[in-house]
Image (tube, rainbow, N blue to C red; front, side, top):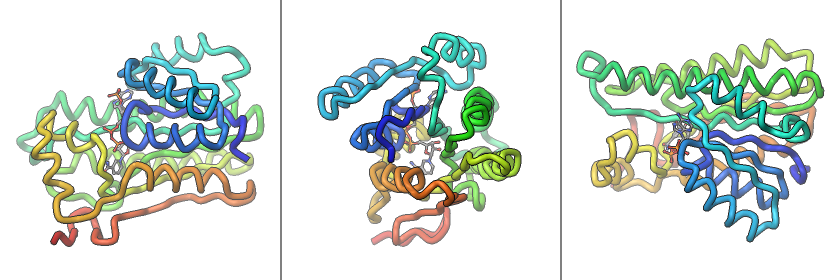
Length: 254
Ligand code: NAP
């Protein structure tokens, strides 16, 4: 079912995007992977080609850069433009400061990546999906998009935006067979907290201390599942947490 589908994953150099690339490669998908770290992407490409004998294309891309997205799609062979599944995964949080103490340049980075980058890619890919009358857009929202938590105002707002972009897009293409899914995970242990705490590995590790968090592979399995259900089934939203997490702020730690 997934074999030979063309799957574009943003932010595939780490965490959930990387695990999703592995999961889809195992199923025989043709992968188009992008991120800013092309070295890591190319290491993953080599691994996936050797392990699964798959077709993997990598692109150095900052999703905030509209022109770079245009140039990338201009450079892709026509055959690969017929993307079946777009996984809008690239995203990040920066800091946990209160709004009044936050760095406005970091606000820009988070908003431009999580909202505008996702929209640019969606705008680029969905018209071909409509033309082909097939496709699936899978967005990485977050539990942070369901309710805010202290210090998370900007990040939470971007993930609430992902929810509403997903809901709005689903309405805009309701007459087509294209599906839209918003995945909303709670705590997943990836590089996310290292990025949030600007490289402070110890502080990042503390986030996951005393709880068994979700893994990137857990989320990749769910993404694959949403893409594998019969075509008349649309999984609109998946909210998934570690068993000892109830909300963004309520986490039981031993
Ligand atoms: P991660 O390990 O830090 O991976 C983030 C990915 O996004 C990296 O591949 C990074 O690649 C890419 N990225 C960041 N900015 C980018 C940009 N401007 N252009 C292109 N790619 C960019 O974190 P993760 O946990 O896997 O996060 C993946 C998604 O899941 C994010 O949208 C995040 O908000 C969401 N999420 C995470 C959690 C969690 O607890 N981890 C929970 C809910 C939702 P480069 O740095 O190479 O560009």
